[in-house]
Length: 260
Length: 260
Image (cartoon, rainbow over all chains, first blue to last red; front, side, top):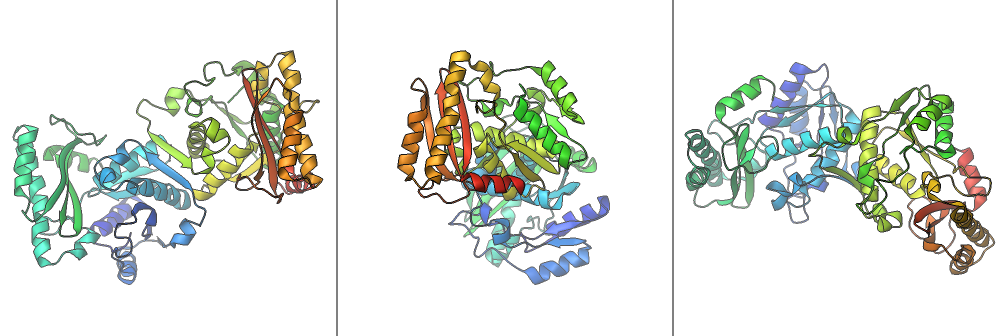
């Protein structure tokens, strides 16, 4: 979706390591924004994006416009049930339908051998893996670890919305996840771990959810049963951010070594 | 879906004329049957099907079982709105969702250059063309004319359900379409043409719909505006049959010559 940051460029680096040719797409997909969301103001920085991608060494940049991707009578949708309706899907009812539909189109247009996705959008990655398996797309999925700022804040195009106060508050989302992760790994009961984590969040933030979910199905789990994530979404002023961590950490490191 | 008849074999012949290799699938797709429909009793005749396909000269027969196509946690669906909700879709609410979903899977598994579909299932053909265009599948669609018995009855696997009385009645579905087609071509008002057509149907049949629709969108049209279909569905005892004709006929013949 453009407004590229180090997280995106890490996807390109991983792809270059593994594949003889790398295709990137920049497409701010209207189908994944609700009418009241930030489609119009979503950060756009096409000139820098192109420079960054060229420097990172991509072979093809696919930059379609919305009327090419969605002609006036476009009416076919791809949906993953019920995974698309919880967490981010509950907060953004048609969001994942827009994501899965555009990814089917991109897979058919580009026909890649492998697809590189960022771990920050954990639910999206799980959902796309499921869609790809269910619909028999012949493409490998590699989920690339979240790239963070030195203070831990996950890189996100929406970080540009944050002024310096909000930015300082936003770090507490990562901190809340770390505290929850450590509590769970230390054997705390889930409810206690989540409460301790939530208490770490800046008082001026508004927590949407903080939860422990199964790493494969994204269903909430009561007992730590690896692979699992702690996931969170919170609002800092008008900016809504999401983040997640594997629990336990050891498991995560092994998974990353084995390519996800 | 097996229980092959001359209509299916005509698809194979067309494919052989145009393609260096022909793949056929036999899969009675549970996803396109409602719980109260005829999945359990849908005609199965695998041994004869294999012989017929071998004789027709296919190169590959793909015969997956339902648990391979739909593992227990299968949950991704492809839908064409609103085309999937009218006529056959109104009568069979989840039917077309099942069809579009299985065709996406089959396209991804087989990766064909061209897909051959029967004109008898006109709405299905229009819907699949739309789905393929919307989702950017790189596959040509060729719709092959309906093969009929000498008396005009469209070949259908469900014709096996008909005893000789019902079979004689079922011919009136084709006759109703012919009468409607001729009336429309003669300049009759739509309502009159449909009424004349409906009056041709056997009094023991139950008409589900008889309608004139746009040949590209499948939306009902009031004035004859080629390309158009007259479409019909009716029940003969417990057997429900569908059929359609192009109007005007001249248009149909031109389209068939042009492979469209």
